[in-house]
Amino acid sequence: MTRVLVTGGAGFIGSHVVHALTAAGCEVTVLDRGHPAAHRDPLPAEIAGAPVSAADLRDPAAVDAALAGVDVVVHQAAMVGLGVDLDDLPEYVGCNDLATAVLLARMARAGVHRLVLAGSMVVYGEGGYSCARHGRVRPGPREVADLAAGRFEPPCPRCGEPLAPELVGEDAALDPRSVYAATKVAQEHLTAAWARQTGGAVAVLRYHNVYGPGMPRDTPYSGVAAIFRSAVEAGRSPRVFEDGGQRRDFVHVRDVAAANLAAVAATGALDGWRAYNVASGRPATVGEVAGRLAKAAGGPEPVTR
Image (cartoon, rainbow, N blue to C red; front, side, top):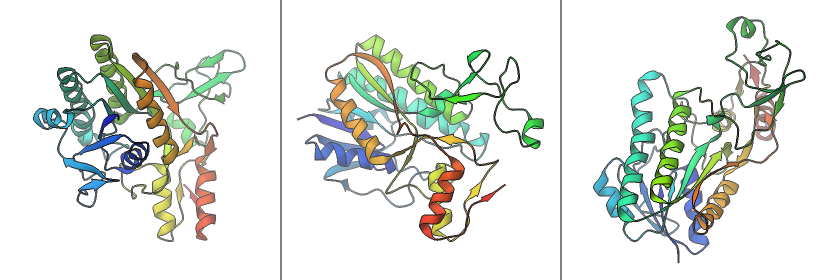
């Protein structure tokens, strides 16, 4: 029986991962801080029969206790979303990077050499684009004048012509453009260094936009699907920014949990560090998603601003 520690296992995605692991016969324990950005209610005593310990990953003693007898760690704990402002920066770095560093150090000391890390597609920045003349390019930051004129798609940085969107592979260059994205890139670098030094196995799962049962409510730390869901539940029009043409890949949380289960098995047979996109492979625009949610709820249509 594989013994798994799930950090952040009481959260939206983490709880689904715990259910998938226990259903597959794993012996699971959960370590969760219960951060107020993710939890409005007290932590439960157990999830799907897995005991829940309330502790901060930055506490080495708590991490040591949680790692006792563990074969593999599934590291879901993180502060997510865009946050409120730069005052959130220390908390993002503390929760995501310092906590990951403490976890990795204690795993090395405990002899636990298998890790599944919850990554994010935000590490790619603007995503993939190609120019008819110059091939694959990396667009720069959008200009204020273009946005004011309603030109929302980034142009080719070399010739200024329109670009065609492309799917992003795991070998794409990383280009974090927010504090959260920067901390997720740092997590990846930390785990890669840890794998090289310890000979351990790391599977990084770069989640795209996750939705499904248990989605968080509308907060500065939740994604667009949760924000739209909160609006339609309250009978309000979902607010769509720009022209609604932003492309996203929405993946169901149960598929994400299945990916974690597969990654746990893979770390038992492989070594080294690997990253995987976890997505549906079917991009949709933000405007389309808002419209479908509003129609399904029988509420007012989205408003674009």
